[in-house]
Image (cartoon, rainbow, N blue to C red; front, side, top):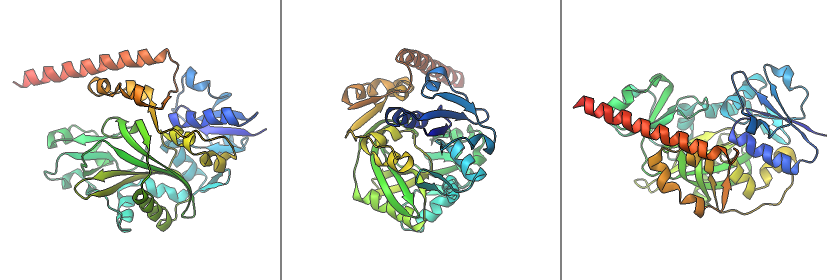
Length: 347
């Protein structure tokens, strides 16, 4: 009987893997491991046989498999242990280089892969607005967005922890999920993300299957030349000005929309856990909790995806969906009232 520990078990990607292990890993014991400061609600905790607190490496000794999921737990494993295996897949400690967004961009640019114009410090921006911002060093969370003016930029806390990039119009982003060893790709899955939370870029809300040789070629070049070992998601945007894809980042961790990949490609869990199951080719999927968490102006026109999606994915109880919706409506109205109040005071 195999004993598995999934770190940061509250994350959607952790629940996705737990769901497949539950379904296809016969008689396996599945625990969720909380790092210091992490919490989990009762619905999400029910995906696991037990929730345990992880405070040091000694807590890991009882498990056959240990899978970090988000940025925080992946960074913790790589820095505390170094190289580690999940099944037959080596995750190299060198993948931490992917967490350093600015320097990794420069390495990718040296390969001839297009990247957006990037500023390491906000003082360098000048008047090049709108500008996209995100964390310099990946820590998890949704610290990203668009600043449309210097005034917007000034409002941002901890600007020294951000990098700033040329804004590439268009909501669609393109992801290539992979498992690789020593720079050789073992399996991939491509998707097109048409709607995100937050809207400027983040976790997928609505995704479709996608297949483009150019994306695969760029991904192979990055993984091969930089010798990556492990798993992750390579993200791109399409730039009409360049008429080409532009590399955005490698998320060297499990990504939030991984369930869509697992449904369509059974090799990810085969390599990690030696789990076999039939693939279910699915052209599109909607993450419904994230849909209801969108701001109201974005939510209303996006309701159509409920009908258009081949698969609706949720991790909460059905009763929680109207609560998420009502809470979000109240938040959207409050934001609008505050904004209008500020405009009136300014005049």
